[in-house]
Image (cartoon, rainbow, N blue to C red):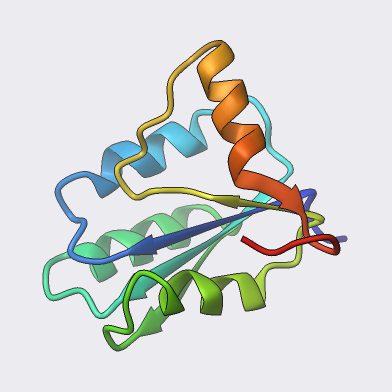
Length: 117
């Protein structure tokens, strides 16, 4: 069965902030999600970090691309998304608790069959 939420996270040379971001997502109480982490041709340890986390949690899938940029990378990740809702996550993992996070979640989430982000 497809997950309710597909999280698409493009990453380019994100090794410094990526573990904290992924740990934050994995630490959430909501569990009906998949992540498509798009490694956008990184030249640092981003790919290895993503592979390590994908090996630990089957909800995380890694898409390896040559450097295609901030528009094409998430677009290719969205094409693989199976969830009813899409969420675009920044690899810095910056999300705040409370009303602001709810508003940011609503802003970055949409019904897949109505619009694509």
